[in-house]
Image 1 (cartoon, rainbow, N blue to C red):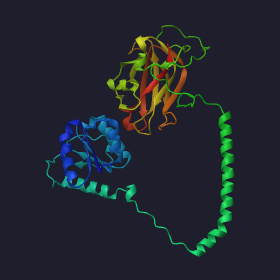
Image 2 (spheres, rainbow, N blue to C red):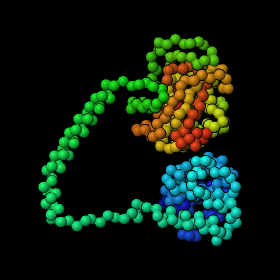
Image 3 (spheres, helix red, strand yellow):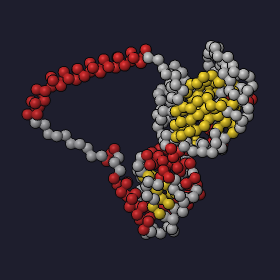
Length: 378
């Protein structure tokens, strides 16, 4: 059952969260705040279920929580649903994207249940909870009484309405057929800046090999130069997969490892504001690649929007050359949620990803990432 109140807080503020939860529960409200997950449930699933169903989300802002990627993510999700109730529990600067909603000031609150600021917070929650329109509380429309005169007028108009509907159906079928013919004979743009999908393709699983494409007519532009060279692909696999020897070489923090851990069921914030992620392939040997895949599981302002791919041969912190800039589609695609970005074949020892923006610019420096792949071979 979805809670009336979801409390978001940093680990160091657990005692304050517990104190507030106790007071709110005494009002008869269901409160989700204890993050101890029962066996058999995953942390992400439990939090998402409670967060997306809560009637109100109380975010406790403190010096610690303003730096927490989890708290910021929960606040963002609440803001999108217009259920955010910010509370300042100690002097801190609330992140810019959440300052539009006035915060309750509990910086001087010592646990007094009659504290004016606390009472104002309770009143705000009371209004939100009582006015929340749940499906089972929506008023049911009562049928209007029927009249014989109305029936007679409807009977007279029925043939005309039927003819109009039939005509509209014919026009719709004609337009649909024409559109399908146009799309079947039209060429693809091949632009590298957009995601493309194909019903006949799917991401390569860890350790998997695909069919070997034909040899490229483009000669290699050198051997062990610092510039990524162009070459033919010998075999296809996910070069970044840890199962295939892919590994992280340089990044602002360890969060970049989660993008290549072959776990498509969870996502992670990555620290992108102070640097890029640099990856190497098995034994740091050169590989040939021409396709990048990014898993976009849903529509979210936290998703990466624009990014740049780069390749290099010198060293993890050496010279890199741009493969191209690309933009995701902020939506889950079906039947496969993987978005594909193709480019001219490149041969290099190192691969770098640079985050340019997120769909919500407030998350540019810490967007969320599910998983990505780089398809190619050695």
